[in-house]
Image (cartoon, rainbow, N blue to C red):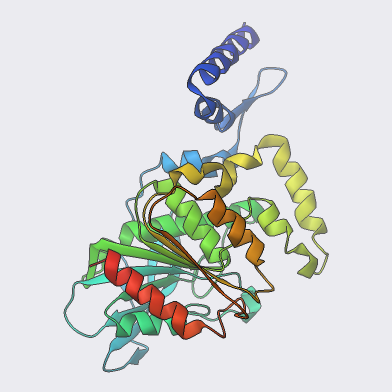
Length: 328
């Protein structure tokens, strides 16, 4: 009887999906449970990280706690900070302009860094200083496993998905910082941090002014498989784990390219023509896919590398102009 009812339920969902479109089917595929041939129900623990399921959550955030200042200038003060994301401590670096505020906020998501080489603020520190000197608070999370943060999940894919929840919980926590104006928040992302930023924007489905430097815009899991040649095992472990993952999950439900319709609001994209980490063709194709959306700017800098060396001052100046326009 149970199998019969399951069959009827699936039939209804297929009918509804055909009538109302793909989202209805996606909701079923992304369900938290699967039913075995003998009718036993199993939990699918990583289904909660599909973009649609993350969008159904409420993010209340937690108190952002500032540690004693680590550096003070006439223009800003630098702090380490921490907050809680789904019960885990996440640390980061804050640059807060001098004065009483409240100040607009730029939340910065860095690119990938080897854990052994990482130091708090790596990948964001220089631009954070510029933002702070121009009247913007910068909040740059270390993410789980980095800085003084708690360790992430031991599952290689959940560890990645936890960057999304950490980012979402930080955005929800901005209002707890006394100097911050939570009504004026922008996002900055570089490389893999650009992929995090885009996924977060799709989860939230609302307008948040965003600037992206050489963002990783290829879909999951290609977005990580592309870089496995640099791994000690040349990606063998990751491919093995991916094969297991795909037995239970539809990877398209985790891919930012599936939900480009959920990207709204102003966006500025910067790409170096000499980038050897994120090919310019990725950004070219991504921007082409966004045609028809308003307030999307795309700048290519011939000869600039992955970190915008060769055009750095121009790029950050354009970011300041962009945020001043949309976070005024």
